[in-house]
Image (cartoon, rainbow, N blue to C red; front, side):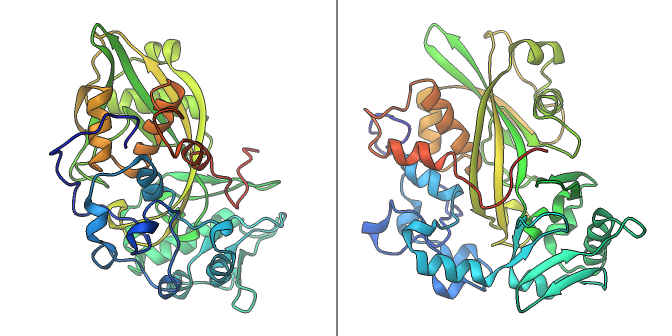
Length: 369
């Protein structure tokens, strides 16, 4: 059942394009963590050939977790996991032994590497060369991504943002163009806020519908969300996004938005994210709640959102079970329901698994130093 909701009938199937990357075909495996099959280790993912009839039925909370946290876990199948990881190239920079991201082999084949890179195909290592007298790692990475964009090497670079994302790690100061981050498989960071009101009929949540022209067009979202740019602090990002997406006044957000921790997950991207399917997306989201009065109404300010609707918890649960939310936004709502005592161990048999999976330990540095 979804988020502790009572059993419902005649709700219909979710959208046909929703997908579990590499969920096993046997129905009895439906609620296990996703495992990437061997034939997908070096191939790109396709929405059409991954879609199975069982995946269009009503979604459980654990299904929602699997939709987003789709990268396999070592403990579930060590041999397959090691085989998968060994197929990737590891992205790193001088000054730290840490792996900063995983790069897929077909991505490596298409990137226009220059002599400014150490590309070791035997050890499967990628690292920009730099020195104090020459160009920095950031300049090398930027030039490489721009050349790839000019060559039309990747669809994902067609949505060039002119916005930098920080690559976190000990003793490094690295940033790269936001649209290029999935090519290097680095951890990206964002903010998500759930805005809600307490009414005589119970809690209601402000839910926006994404603009059709955007990634995951037409799906439902969290009230406010956005990526954290280089040099930006999470709360300041939240204040900015709240104004841009929902027309919330800055003083309201600063006075009432409450930080509620983080969630983390590791996804395979699909076509709805924009660009090539199968790229790697480890993410950390900084979570905020904001309780407002019923007289506070969010309004679209940019082209990200079509409209907002004020829904009861039951209506949100229903939409979740139909797969109508953007996958990572579904996780944020599960986290919200857990923190507010709506989703509990008494009404969710997979409660412990869900809570654990909302806070995945990623295989890359996440320290904001």
